[in-house]
Image 1 (tube, rainbow, N blue to C red):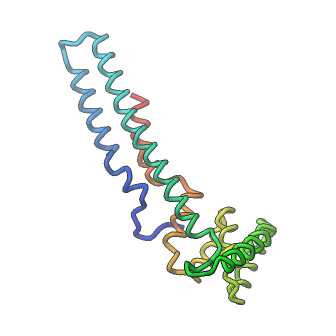
Image 2 (image 1 turned 90 degrees about the vertical axis):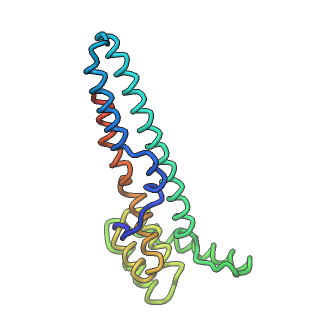
Image 3 (image 1 turned 180 degrees about the vertical axis):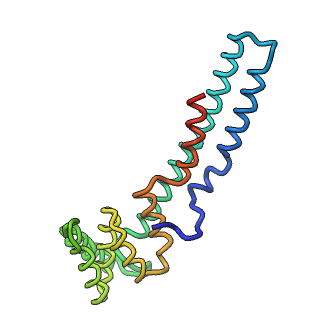
Length: 192
């Protein structure tokens, strides 16, 4: 599952720190320091050590911002997608009843075996009978298990949530693309 054409909040959060720019500045400064005939070997080592520490600190700050933004985004998506389907105008009694129904549906969905197709069958039956709580519970369990078949089936019936579901699945089961961007920059700073 991949988000289609949506720029994640995580990528927006760390755009201020361009790791390619950090790398480029590091390499330019490193070349200047190594080519400076006025510096002794010890002086070069001292300047290069400080330069490497600065680049590593910038990259670590970007990684921390990325992880914080990803955790925040995941929390918001879980709040929106993994809660009982209750309207904003519902009475407190209706909300309590919906929570109890959803909790029971979650227990039933969680009791299915991850080794067979029973969760997908439960989801499909819920969709067929209009049981929104059970269908959502099956999606939540499928999301937690990393079962794209069940999650995609729920998304097909709820297309307005598809991008959010795809993004949450990515955050839960795949390394964030922003962290992959940092991998190369982190390696350059730590290796040289």
